[in-house]
Structure formats: structure tokens, C-alpha cells
Length: 62
Image 1 (cartoon, rainbow, N blue to C red):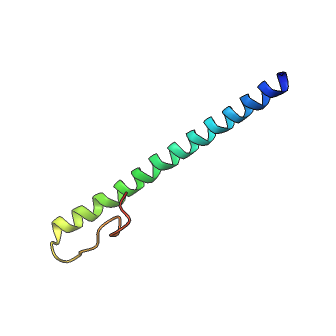
Image 2: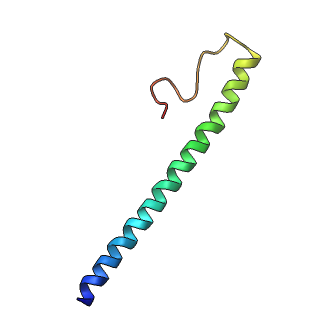
Image 3: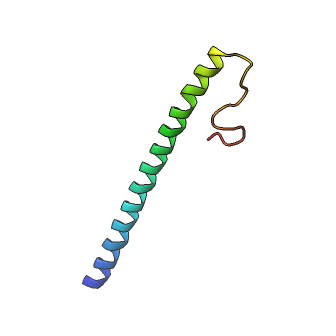
């Protein structure tokens, strides 16, 4: 019974750590996308029509 509890605890801890890492990774990705989007918006305001590129590129927005 103790072995079963140890296995269950280790599985739960592994799942918790994996969830934490994935959440942090997604948060960082959103921050990087926003950091790239802001300069693109400034360029569009300063030179309208010059650059039609957007960040993230079409079809990759989440």
C-alpha cells in the first residue's frame, strides 16, 4: 500500500510540475508576441501603407 501511495504521489507531482512549466512557457510566448506586435503597430502608424506585415503573421494568431 505504501508503494502505491508513493507511485501516486510521484505521478501527481510530475503532472503538477509539467503543468507549471507549460503554463510558464505559454505566458512567455504571449509576452514575446506582444513585444513584437507593439513595434509593428508603431511602424504602421508612422508609415501607413508602407508595411502590411503584421505580427504574428496571418494564420498564426492564437
